[in-house]
Length: 318
Ligand code: GDP
Ligand code: ZN
Image 1 (cartoon, rainbow, N blue to C red):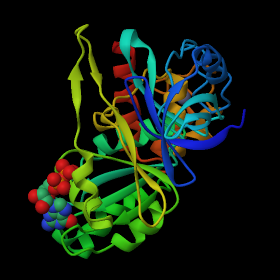
Image 2: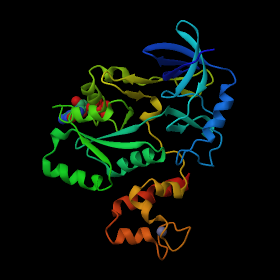
Image 3: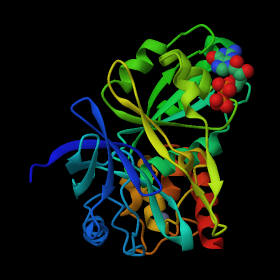
Image 4: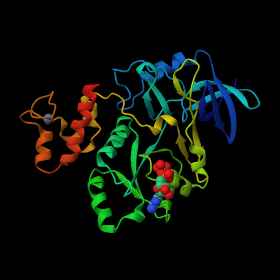
């Protein structure tokens, strides 16, 4: 049996559209593949995906997965093998199980507006932590560049660039920064996230006219009464690369992270973690806390530290 390699570009209701050598094949999954798949995910070597607390990853294939399939007749086939994932972006699914929303995502384009709505750094931190937790590179896109003068822009950017993240400033209005944005997207699998009203749809339409039209959310309630999503898809970029359009990514939610994992999601804190006096330091009021010392000395932004405490408090409250 000859197997062909391809990428899953649409998934829903047990059917998968696989793109291979420029054509589309509608595939179903070989019956006993799901079992194997659970196993291979739990052995994933990603930084935080291997969380021991979540051993039961019972999801199937997601868009972005690279697969091998057998073509049974022209245009249809059976997926026989799933190739190892570089990353997986998951959400809390049915019965608290994690469900992969998109696989092999290279980057999360976190879009915020420079103004209207005003950038909320606490909200930005949540998106950054979500990207870090999934081991996916965050790229911060600051849109509506046309609404702000250069001094205000610099004031906005400074504390963010201080963290070492890549920032692209754009304007869907005058197309400032659209070329650098295209360069960043080229040949990668990306997803756009961010609060509503910041210009995600407008920006996608600048990147590639018509792109925003295809990104509408479709969700429905199945006969069992549980809310599911019909389909996720990867939308091809004409200049190379893909944009993931998956309902689950829209309402980004932070999966349960342990406290230590959460701290790891703040890159500027990583270097200090091992230096606290107590191994189980919660970085609150313990003596000899290296993180508090870094905050007090000004080398770590106090607001980011407070963001950590807020998120840790939420995790505890769950
Ligand atoms: P989304 O909810 O993130 O998809 O945001 P939309 O693309 O729907 O944009 C929200 C509003 O902001 C619309 O009225 C857009 O016309 C406007 N908008 C989007 N991008 C820009 C921009 O770069 N500059 C300005 N001034 N307005 C923008
Ligand atoms: Zn500490």
